[in-house]
Amino acid sequence: MNLRSLCLAIFAITAVFVSAALRGGNPLVAMARFSGSEEQASKAAPPKPTKLPAEIVLILSLEEMPGLDNPKSFWEGAYEIRVADWQALTAEPQLVDAPDFGESLIQSSFAKRSVLAEDNRHVTISVPVSGRVSERLKAQASNPQVFLLRSTIRLFDAQLDRQYALKVNRLWQFKLFPDGRATVNIKIEPDGSYSTYGPVPKVLPPGYSIVGVPTNQIPAKTP
Image (cartoon, rainbow, N blue to C red; front, side, top):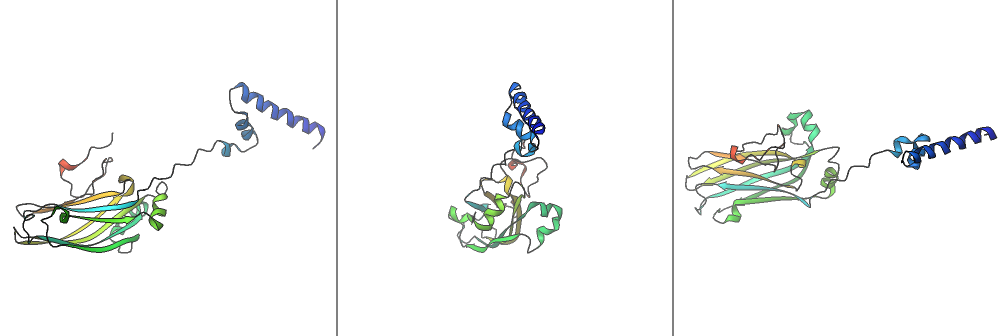
């Protein structure tokens, strides 16, 4: 670079600093723009990482049954919880029934041979948020996650002298249950009819539907 070019360069840099100072701006940012790195200087701060719960908890709750106070009434079941990419499911809804869709987190069973005690009317399923679960949920902002319940539940109501075999399959988006807790309720009516409903988010987004939820149980929609 000759002397004339060097002087011109110094003059241009000085002009940038002076102009930025007169406008009340930051001369360093102005210089970054001048040097061709404007995008780097003005880049927005990265989004805050998703705050994760310590565990994912699903509660199966036997809410009502005529024979709850009968010692011969019972319920039992087998279940699996999986996690998968929400975008993949919305692109191909039939994947919800694919046995290998997503990743299996837990497979187990339970047997409550009496429902007299309040504790025996609820089953708590928990999955620690660690390893692959943690990795998936940390990427929630760019790759939303959904949990899937696949279960078969058998109940016997001694008062009605009737058995029930229910397939209870559900899915719930992590973003609607950020505390990691969700509940599925089961209800047997005095006439023998039954219903299963939930999980119900605390705030219901527009257009979101909940399987089997009674009208009086639907939370308020967001504005």
